[in-house]
View 1 (cartoon, helix red, strand yellow):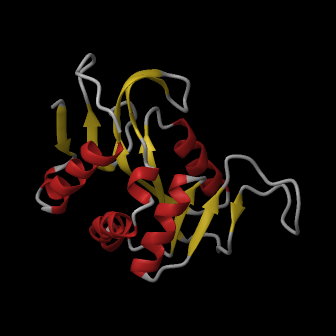
View 2 (view 1 turned 30 degrees about the horizontal axis):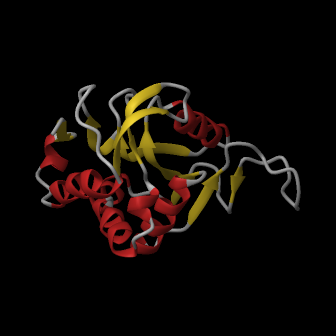
Length: 184
């Protein structure tokens, strides 16, 4: 079934990556013509909520970020709205590192109206910005730019990169066009 391989030799040695690839295919992959969030069409879709809604699966995915957390030594974990926030919450809990949220658009109400970033931060802090699934990378790179405008030092990592953006991820996931449809 398709071309599935872990990105980078360091992560390729983590036994849990094979588990992650299998759980993506078994639980979250649907074949058929779909419109992706960035406007591009694809013949498959990965439903992150079929992964993140299971506490055991979410916990195992969060643990896969442990080497990246150790390597980047962030002061904060950040998540992009919406799936990245779920992931960042789990990683923040596992690593015992505070988190912040990067919104797609500033909220129009409350004490901090018109701000993109929710949660406390200090200029100069290192931030590990997490994304769920990256297709073209536009939204996560916009979130990175918003954090950098606040003088934060940002490392970006996703769970899945569909191969269309130069973003580090736990897995690089791509399928050739035209394989049999998978029903989920």
